[in-house]
Image 1: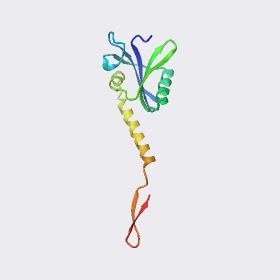
Image 2: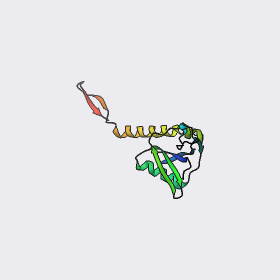
Image 3: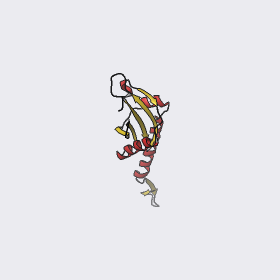
Image 4: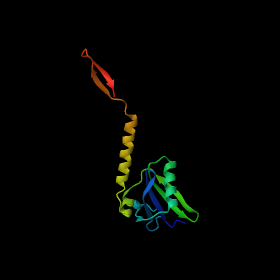
Length: 136
């Protein structure tokens, strides 16, 4: 049914930021870009976008490449990659999607720091000249 092609949707923070159609090269059945497959930008349907986002969310992934097949019964998830390559999708879509990933990582780091940061001790001089820690 797939005829050596699939769709890769790149999900970042619950949103599809880019999608491409991948076609296998020659007799190769896998359509991966690094195996010589061709790639082209594609507009995916709302249903495909929902499925890609749900697949990533189900696996607890904020960043994922979701590979789907187009079948007679609708989109089917083939594979979910937790560390997808960006070269093919950036080439196909003409977008720098690595920036979206960097923004996500920066936001998550800031969130983690604000939650996990213990109070910092501040030296507070007493009248006797002794120092005692104070907390902010």
